[in-house]
Image (tube, rainbow, N blue to C red):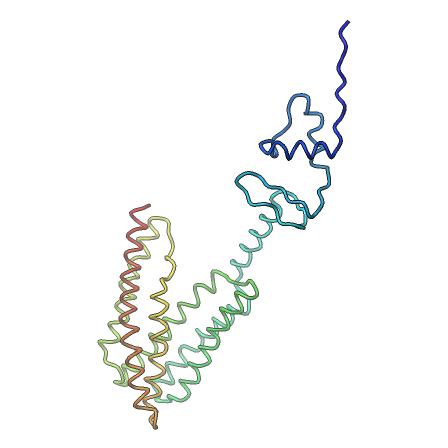
Length: 266
């Protein structure tokens, strides 16, 4: 007559010790004689000051609140996606205000009201600073805001150039130099779209070029008002303008090379 060997049920402490002694066990389902106890391991409470390490992964955070698998990452991903899809929020409203002020700014330049034009440009600069800062602080960075911000910058540059060229403050060929670069880059949009890409991220040289141009034109406007600083403003303004134009085309060339590399890789 055969006798059955009774295997004593392991205590919770032993189960945890055996689980830690065999790191390859991980979360794999138990088989064989241990299948009956597969559900008991997850039920053993682990003190908050104990960390578990799995090969190839960083240790768990000490004192972290236990959550169900995937709930935290899924929740944060959905929240981030929802924020990026927002249209109505304070940062986007500030960006929209900048766009509304573009025709006002252009009209003031054409009418030789340079003082008020500088005021509008200053308000635009403040809103440009605030919309990015508030979007990052409040977690409201959205696709709409990322589109409106560079569009507003380009429109202010274009409005200032056309107004100053109309008044013979800057030559028309300088306007063509700046606008020609944007026209050239516009041909890359359908090329990227055919390969399933949207516009590529802006290179830091492009940001530096925009920064230089947005500093140059207010100084050129200030020089038209006259006064003791007019000469200095004119010289510094043209210095920023030439630096901005050079960086503008350099950044455009780098952007074309990026498009070429993306198309070849695709």
